[in-house]
Length: 242
Image 1 (cartoon, rainbow, N blue to C red):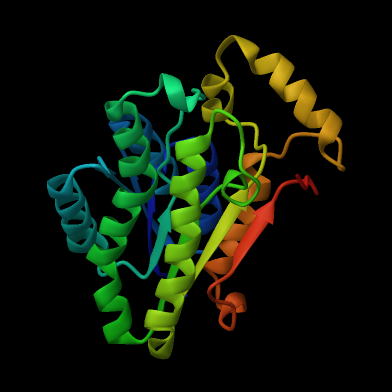
Image 2: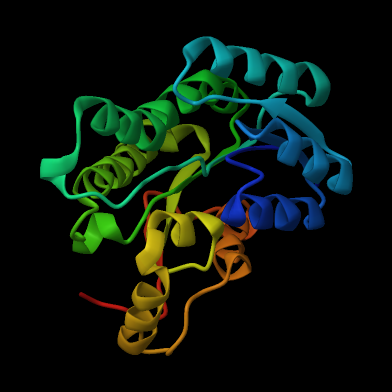
């Protein structure tokens, strides 16, 4: 069945893989991203729609959702994939940095979910999939605020699953560990190769994950096959436990 999937951060490393998998399942995909050029290129490839989206701006959220609904109907699958981080010790963070991390990774996710969940509840069907991080589970040095924001995503996921489950709407989270994306590489600065080698040495499967491997879990949560799965946070981390 063709459904309308709205993916925030849709032109990013994991986001673009998610968009492609959802389109391959037969869904109509709205690629929503701050990177308008990348979103338009991907939407053209998929035959979908691109909308500009700044998840830290309430007006941008309302406008993006309104454009998507006008073109493709109510959002039936929401994937919250927009995220951002720069590895920084807590003592080196200013208020602007802290606020930016929380606004992008948690507050924006809550706002856009609020914008689309009511029609899902009204129609008795919906899928909300949040992209979290294994840093929320294990903690990570120089990821203190990011880890806290993603822990909030996990708690929001479980709580909303309780709140809307009666209506047939499911809410789950995919929690990636080390996935080889531009965001992972850029967040490490000059230490990127050292960090990647360290991770490979400590991951039981002996390698970094791919965006497609993370996207496959999102696609499952968004499918009819996951109709009895809600309130779950599933790690995609190659077995890394710390």
